[in-house]
Length: 137
Image (cartoon, rainbow, N blue to C red; front, top):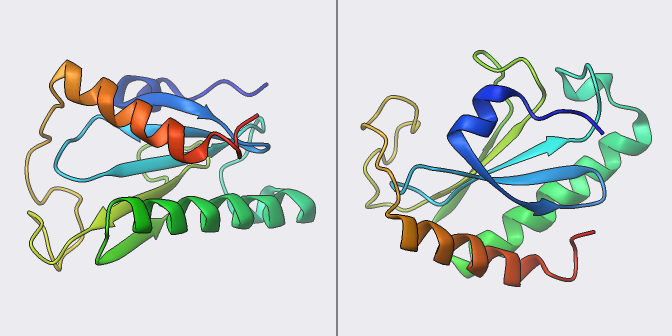
């Protein structure tokens, strides 16, 4: 099992595990913001995954995007694999609204991080776990 990068551990809460990826929630209440981290060692880019893992990553990413778009009534889902700060492959899935703090620009650096209240963070984690109960291993 691959270790989740320390920066991701610091910035996120682990919600659960899909067949390939860990599902994380970014601790920024400005946006519903999720991250998929493939459970593979020494992978920094999608093309470094096996063909089978690439297909599984696409399935998990698409399922995540569809469910959070519906559950959060998103105007748009932004999906990105940047890796400029964290070298471990991780895929951001950010729920966007036309009236969010950064719209229509990218979220990075637009506004300061807004920490969740502990009770709201726990509620969000449980809410999302319930949506993915059938997909998690």
